[in-house]
Length: 148
Image (cartoon, rainbow, N blue to C red; front, side):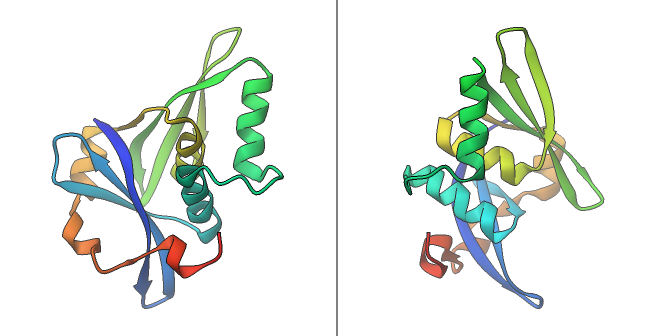
């Protein structure tokens, strides 16, 4: 399933505020929410907004390294859910071949937010985690919560 980043918001939970990235899937009204860390959430929002703070942060550096070595991000895939943890793969095209790298979904989304590379979600993962977008309407955008 093809997806895109709908929003990065902050949910209030019994354990305190937790960022959540909302992934919209083509031809679906529901979304896939993935709860992530604040640093990753801020990085995704910076990538979506194309904010340049002058010096590369971690995800900017990762992307610079891939590109400097002659590669590019082909796509990311959120492929499985194991023990309530989403598993993602980063697909790179390199001068030698295609590489598949195990990665956290939040890191892969921070990278694709800078490149517009495609996001794929397995059907099973989406079906297991799908939620109505309206469930997240009241949450504040990450940009309103902290300094980016």
